[in-house]
Length: 253
Ligand SMILES: Cc1cc2nc3c(=O)[nH]c(=O)nc-3n(C[C@H](O)[C@H](O)[C@H](O)COP(=O)(O)O)c2cc1C
Image (cartoon, protein in one colour):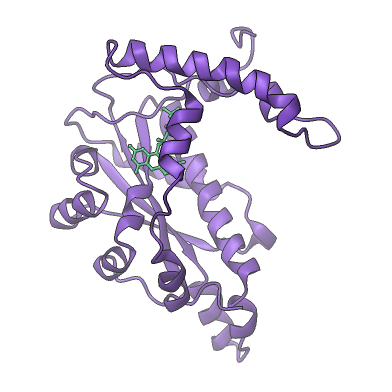
């Protein structure tokens, strides 16, 4: 199905690809402000706006973050690097100022979810508005390799944690679009479809992804989506996240 006759935003969304190479060119402050205002326009649970965004302009901090993220050089070379934080600190502080202690509520898994979802929605609005202005973006979940160090570097208080970063900049190269699962594998009507009904579609997609990797790597990488995901997810990663989050005041109840 072609999105050609659909509004620009539909085409923009369906044209997304992560950009990991940027040219050395600044983003105008006015563009950045529009991007951040668009981030802010995202829905947020109960209008709590339980997230904060940290723009990292200090080159030393950028270098450190790039290393923490697993030596992702684009964290250093992109025009703007934003860290999206789930933030329950602000709510806690305003309630304390008005004499209400809501610690018990903020301790809950539900509030962890709310703040994380709020941060993610603001981030995706950031991505879409940046792409609408012609910039490229890539998320940087790699920051969670070193959550304690990132927290210290950015001076995050208790009840705030870095969910991920995002690089924004003028793209140096536009990679090929990464194929997605067929609709029948994940988009269901009225009830969940178990693997017996979806495996055929997933197998077809496996072949599409294999071809995609073959093209992208000029034949050196040939993997199905199932193989990539199985390899990536079979061993547990970042087991420190649970204790880190608890120390930061999340997931306590
Ligand atoms: C939460 C999140 C974290 C991510 N972290 C990284 C990262 O650390 N480094 C990276 O190169 N890409 C990262 N990505 C980008 C994904 O790899 C990418 O979106 C996915 O492979 C699909 O490719 P596409 O965005 O080009 O369509 C992240 C994406 C998300 C949503």
